[in-house]
Length: 292
Ligand SMILES: Nc1ncnc2c1ncn2[C@@H]1O[C@H](COP(=O)(O)OP(=O)(O)OP(=O)(O)O)[C@@H](O)[C@H]1O
Image 1 (cartoon, rainbow, N blue to C red):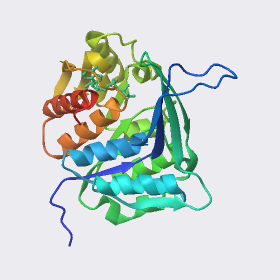
Image 2: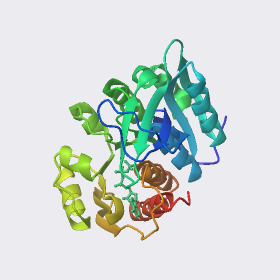
Image 3: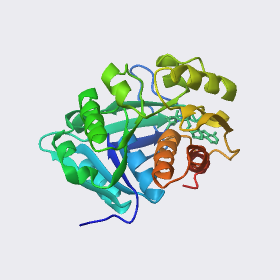
Image 4: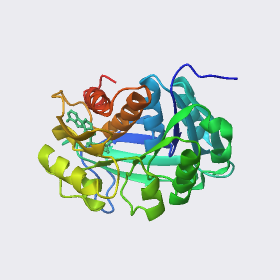
C-alpha cells in the first residue's frame, strides 16, 4: 500500500489565471488607459494555498476545475511544477478557466475583476474517493467555489477523520452547517469584522476580534497585514498575538494564501499551534518581501 513519506494535505478550491497589469492609473468610465506592462500569474486562492503547502514540504492533493483552454493548461502545468497532485482537477469542456485581471497604479493601489468560470462547476465526485483522503491530515477550503462543494468536502473530511481549515475569503455569509464542521477559521481584518468579529485596526484589536469569533469557532486566526496575526482558543495556546516581521515590501498580493498554506503544512508536520503560527507569520513576511 502507498504510504506517503510526507504529511498529506487536501485542498479543494479555486484556480485562476491572473493577468497583472501596471498602469499610470485605473481607467475611469469610457476611458482607455495605456499601461506599462502585463504579466500572467498562477492564481486562485485554492491554487496559491496548495502551492504554499507543497513548498512547506507536504504532499498536496487538489480538487478543482479549469476550462478546456490554454489558461487551464497553464494552471495545471504550474501545479505540476510545484509537485501538487492535480489529477483530480476536472477540465470542463466548453467552459472558460477562472480568470482575474488586476490593474496596479503608480501608487501601488490596485483594482481587480474576477471571472469564476469553471470554478463554479467543481465536481463533488472526487470527494467521495477514499484515495483522496488516504493518509490525509488536513483539508483547506476557501470561498471561491460554491458553498455546496465546500460543504460536501468538509463532510467527507470529517468522515475521514481529517481536520478542516476554512479561509473564509472573500467574505460571504457562512452556512451554519459548514461553520460547525470548521476546526480552524482563518480570516483577514475585513472578513473578521464581516463575520461578526470586532473592527481590526492593530494587533490588540485583531486579538479581540479573534476572541469574539471564538464563541462560534473552536480556533480562530485573524491576520492583520503588516500588523501581524492573532489567534484565539486554538488547541492549548488559548490566545496568541504575533507582530509581523518587519520587511521591505515588494508586494502584499497573495500574503494571506502564503500564510494559510504554511500554517496548515506546519500543523500537519507535527508543530504545535503556536509554532505553526510563528512559522506562517515568517513565511508570509518572506512572501511580502519577494523572497518566496
Ligand atoms: N507588510 C507586511 N509585513 C510583514 N508581513 C506581512 C505584511 N503584510 C502581510 N504580512 C503577513 O501576511 C499575513 C496575511 O496578511 P493579510 O492580513 O494582509 O492577508 P490577506 O488580506 O488575506 O492578504 P491577500 O488578500 O493580499 O492575500 C499577515 O498576518 C502577516 O503574517
